[in-house]
Length: 380
Image (cartoon, one colour):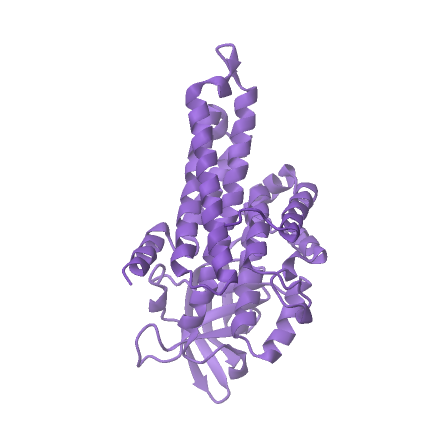
């Protein structure tokens, strides 16, 4: 078993770290969090560097790399700015990977080059007010009239919808079959008449909005179906699997930054005549934090490696997402304790890490849902 990244993977990891340190300093992150401002300029710079095209074939303007390389990129984005990883997941993974995996050639040719160039952004419209963890119970409907479908219903907790150009809308197209069938995915222009989007203020990752979306006879041509009619639930599982690996990678990067910040603080903060990092209790906390981060990293890399090699990894992706997001939250809590009163102030970044970490445990399926998936896969 080889635990060493190859030369290209090391290059990607180091390049994105250098890029983020230059283009995304701490003051930039703080400002965008405080102002709840979307990092559009950073997104554009990532496109010019070629990062948005990392997982797409060269014929569409991409670099042709795999899931492992995407995981390395998301780890570094998470280490610098959690919101940057969220932007990448929403637009590149939700949008681009869905089109690459299930789109027809016309859809791929139209959208993938634009995604690589940063000319188009996507948002996944899946969750509804009454179907969160039980996502297949969605009630948003799409009814065919002539050559067009008319979408009615509402979505909630949709990340980045106001910044998106296109929505990937998951809707019910057949009421006569089981809830896991009769679901179809549509590519819908955000400016389509009958669509209204509103902002939901949230605790963390504030540089990217949560949104409510309502559909009132929003018209979309049947040519905008993504994948196979009534097979959308099966399609969306592949996207969610990628999302879980991505959230795990971003959580690992975020948790690593928390450990680094806590360690640096422990070296400088003097109490009883010596740095607090010299006290065994603080040393134990830091040692436990780094050990868990390394374990989460290995679980994430394993899931990414399996995905790249075509090995079924629903359980492993859920394990990585569950453990990495929990580790990130635990590190944030311990980081707050190490900083003491300073951790509770807005002057230090630890409070933002704490706020951001909670979203990792919710997005892509809650920790409780991940445990159900893991247990179900174990019993097969």
